[in-house]
Length: 158
Image 1 (tube, rainbow, N blue to C red):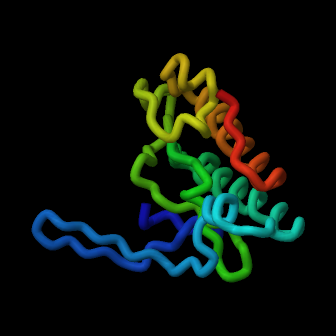
Image 2 (cartoon, rainbow, N blue to C red):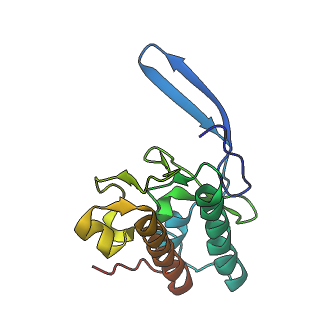
């Protein structure tokens, strides 16, 4: 993941491996997570920021899924969307990310992973993760977050 560079992905500054301990150092995100703004902030953000955040998220996801070597994010949720001082959204926590399908392959996983409240219902019910379902699942997860930002509360569909 350290090879991926985009203005809507949190930048990896460095890492350290010592014995069985691993440490990743990322850029500082002054405004914290989107989840904190949705659940712990008394007043909602202005509309300009509420529209800017989902747009940044969509650009980050488009970068991951649209490259020559697609990356499937697999754990999209508001706690993994971090905000810089100007409320630019950046995706973080790539622990469940996986290289996307390439060539004539369509499946990247048969195991359901991620956070159920954000997952596409058809993905949770079937557990199949092919290229089409990956796109649908990503849109569903992003839609839940966008609706949460617009309404300024967390929305769950099941």
